[in-house]
Amino acid sequence: MTHGGAALGALARDGEALAGAALAALGVHIVRQALGWEIMGPDGPGPGFFPFGYGALMIVLSLGLIVSRARRAAIAPSAAPGAWRAHVRPLVTWAAFALAALLMPVIGFVPAFAGLTLFMARFVFTRDWGSSLLVAALCALGFWIVFPILLDVRLPAGPLGF
Image 1 (tube, one colour):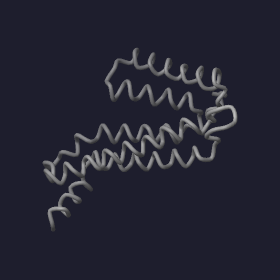
Image 2 (tube, rainbow, N blue to C red; image 1 turned 45 degrees about the vertical axis):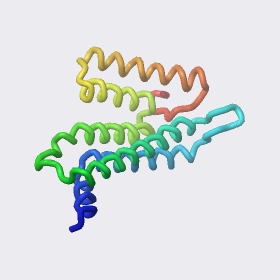
Image 3 (cartoon, rainbow, N blue to C red; image 1 turned 135 degrees about the horizontal axis):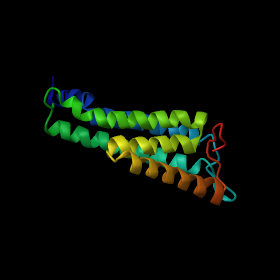
Image 4 (cartoon, rainbow, N blue to C red; image 1 turned 30 degrees about the horizontal axis):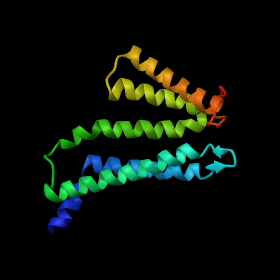
């Protein structure tokens, strides 16, 4: 196997590169969904504007991560065996993002975003339950006030109406 082939093989086993590929795929899904909504209307940004923007940004940043890891793999191929454990946290974070995106049409944007924020604060940033719940509630409330109320931008609503 050539040095380039070894680097590509190492990249295929690299948790960060795999997470980057998964995030890029999620970004593509978000952009495709956002294209079904109005991006820019006569009154300004429509409901697809922000999802399209963060989906596109997610794709660009994920591809940047993959390229960065590819360069690093070409310089120093193959991590130590068992190094995959260090990538569990990023993969679980990606799974939480994906789950929140899947739940948004079912339970609504605000509850799905609150759940994602709670998870991130508690398990990724290891904050206590009290501050995690407070951050989740305030962030969800902030989104609900800014978008549906102040900007009159519809977010996916669940059975509770938000």
